Length: 240
Image (cartoon, rainbow, N blue to C red; front, top):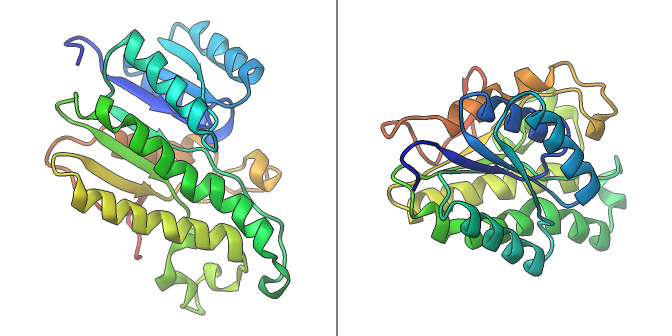
């Protein structure tokens, strides 16, 4: 890895939590690859951050495409040779349907991004992450993924029905647990950003994107003694 600069890549980063994560990590003097599937929007977002004096570069990356992910890996490898931090932020929400009304096709489309896409990107970037002395992977999950909270009638999560989105994030949490045990020397954790106001919820969230990224930044910058295989929000551990 480079001796002078930490290198990170953030997926789904042309807006919202992803863009704010890029801004905050680059603000620490890091080189951050702003990855997004939309070239125009991604290029514009990166240019705006560069205009703020930040070391940000755009890389086109569609988490649902093997070819796109492979090309992104080649771009990063050609530019810096390795990667210290991968933030898997890309994700989509689903229609607010009664679980009994949700069809398999809709579930499959959402899982292709929120679950399969995270595995596709992570596996592809592992060779670059292994070149780091302190490789870290942050999966952006959701408080709705917590089976413990969903089963607690006193918790707001128990009243929110979202078969596709919530179950995809629960699956992502297990993926975090599996990677954490399979990748010694890595720090692999899941982040619950809370309920930030973003396009996904029509900006009805109660947290700012800065508040939502607090936990992502903490996990991305944890020292070698930090935990791995955990689920955290900005206040601490979240029950599985």
